[in-house]
Image (cartoon, rainbow, N blue to C red):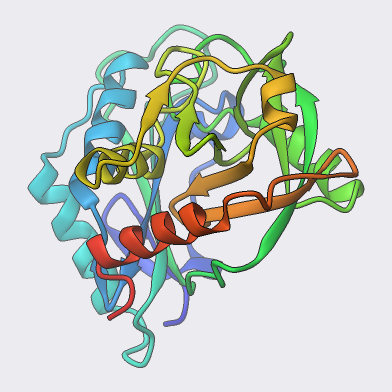
Length: 280
C-alpha cells in the first residue's frame, strides 16, 4: 500500500479506512496528535515526539492506554505494510477520547481511539526561500497542547496561500509567537532567537533540536519574546517543523527580508541533517 492507515487495530489503505461517526474527534475535535518523519523506514527522533504526545494527552486529560513501546510497535507494523520501494514517509497519529454519544462531559469508562497513517514524503530542498505573511494570533490559550482543534491555524494558512505566501507568522499584539504550522526563528547579529516555551506556542521538536544544535556547537542562542519590528529587522527569518526542517525567508508581507547571514542558516541546516542522519 502507498498510504497505510490504522484505526484501533485495523490496518487498511488510508483511503478505505473507516472511523466511527461517534468518535469524539469527529464532533468535538476532542483529541491530540503528533507528526514524525520516517527516513529509510525508521522514525526520526521518535522519543521526542512521543514525549510531546504523551504530555498532550495528559494536559487534555486523555487516559492513554498504551506504552511508548506499544506505540512504536504499531508504527513499525504500519511501515511493514507500506510499499517496499518507499523509504521516506510522514507519520501522523492522533488519539481521541474515544467513541460515545455527543456530550460535552467526558464519557465514563471509554477507551481512547488511536488513528494513524503514513504517506510517502521526501524532505524538501533546504535552499528554497519562503514567503511569509503576518497574521494576528487569535488561537486559544492552550497552544502548548498539540490538539486536533486547528481552525485558527487553518484560516491563517489559507490567508497566507491566498496572498501567495508559504506560511503565516502569528503575533499577539506586537509579540511574535510562531507560524500557523511551523516555529519561527530569527537570527540577529549572529544569535539564534526564538519565543520561549509557554502556553502560547507549541513545544516544537524541530525548535528543540535547533536549540540543542546551537548549544552543542557554541552558536549563540536565546529563548525570549521578540517583536514584529525585530522580526522585520532580523538578519534572517526561518521557519522550522518536522516536515519543513529549516527554511529561510526572503519576503514578509511583500517586503524583502533576511539574506544577511546565509552562512549561519546553511550551517544550522547542515548540522541538523548530519545529527539526524537525513543525508544517508
